[in-house]
Image (cartoon, rainbow, N blue to C red; front, side):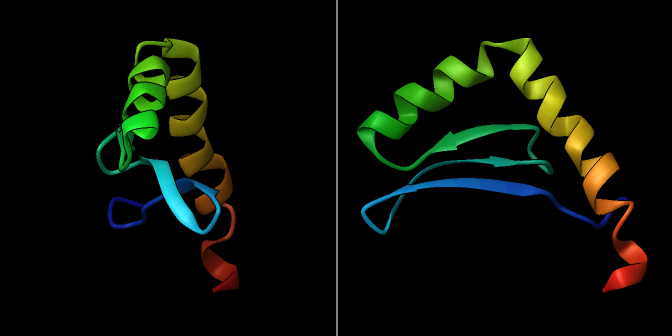
Length: 66
């Protein structure tokens, strides 16, 4: 499970705005708006905890399928 990565990307008009990367454990913004959104989400512990848990519940559950 250590080498598995969960990524949740958010796009608008074919441009990636921000993403959550489980290897970093936080959101990263790629535009001015995305940086603000990433900062907001990184300061909300419930969002971060939920996405970290998804790595274990979603990815680990589907290892055998791929």
